[in-house]
Image (cartoon, rainbow, N blue to C red; front, side, top):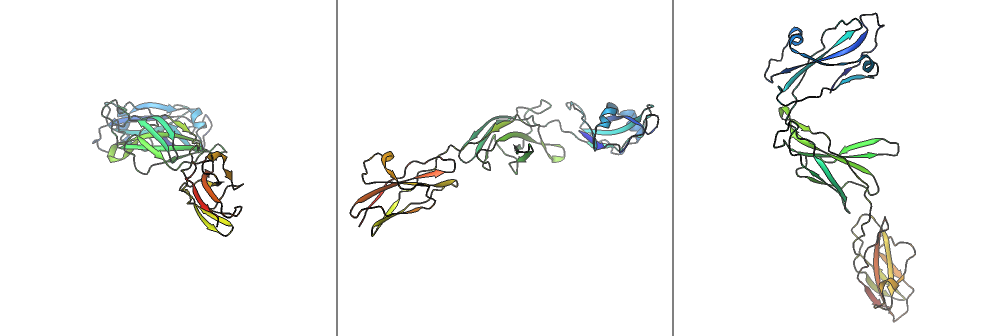
Length: 312
């Protein structure tokens, strides 16, 4: 894709300064060909590959763009480009500066993204490796892969970020920096070794969408400890390791054989501390307790093991 500053202004049709089109020239060279080249030699040896029309010039904005679709197989690896303006009378201006590039033919095709599975801690991505390079040669020239994630905000702005710092080896990646209930679009690019030892990315893979939902219950809480005191029992239990715990429900019974769903819940709102003072007790009575952890999405853990104590 070639680009250059658009003409600042255009003259009336009858003027020699009126630009009616921009011709694009290309010369295929051997990589070891001498770098200096005269305009005359370039004019004799180059090929007119296309033009930017008057309408395209008018609508170009800040820069004019031209896309040269290459068929690289069998071509020399250094290409030399130049442009020249043509006025309404068909007169051509001098050539622009020369632009040289060495496109690499043995660049891997795009991978195929096959899945995005949500786990409690990551969105697990997997893809199929390309089987050949864009020039159909094998094996594919592969250094690894770059993984991208895009998000559209409420204003419709699209933000694309690369998730890995160095190319990923293998065909799987875990996105641990996601947020539940946000919508993402993922795509992957293969990374090849290009001209001059520089990494070159493939085209984008297909995209896969994911909106992770938190349907994962917290782990089972630890067994509560019960300490007796005059007219009360103090219950202590360890906090859960998950980072999204909203609180805990505490249940009590005087019959350890009563089904757990029949026990009495002692708290109205979720407990945000891991201690509880139960003063609604009778002296000499033994009480049994268990705890359930609840996360921010309302997922509930399995009941803890039962702790018990007798009121003095």
